[in-house]
Length: 212
Ligand code: DX5
Ligand code: ZN
Image (cartoon, rainbow, N blue to C red; front, side):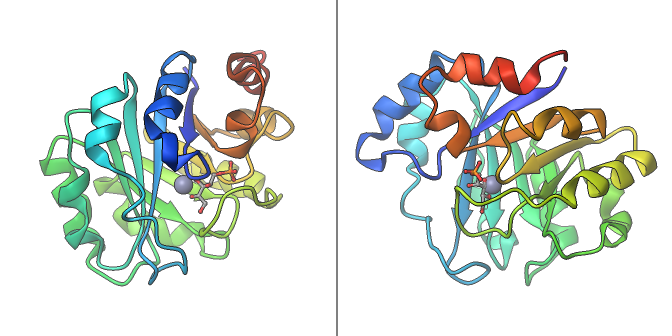
């Protein structure tokens, strides 16, 4: 089954509770939480996401995307009963191996995200420690950016090599690119602006997944 993960990076943080309740009513499988530290990327969202509020109101599992340096020091905070995935970045300054092991030892699925200009083959040496790869289809740092077309080939390249991992695609994903992403091997679609700005989130999810 193809899963959808809804990014709340650009939601109304003054009304986080209301936004979560709105998402609870949809068919999205996961809530994608974008954590930025002001070092790995310029933006800083660490204080924006209150895990207690999210845990209190969400009926969806969390898909935590850490865009941070030294990920090994951030993981702890996002280990909650609702956390299904924690992903770190291949390019982050820090201990990738240690971080992936720490995530798995906490009984959470481990993810490794890769930026648009990094080589897919650079992931290979970590693959045994990884349950999911997030292929970034925009440069990380903000929502609402344009999907980078070379992502299609990158998804295919990774899927041809590895059949037993989740492949997630993150950034600018909508119903105009989702079908090709799925046929090339993506199993999780992250979508922020397309879903959160839509009048009918369930219809938009349906359009993203049509025929699948
Ligand atoms: C980019 C984030 C993405 C992004 C998704 O740095 O990791 O999760 O916010 O939002 P859209 O779908 O608007 O690109
Ligand atoms: Zn993300």
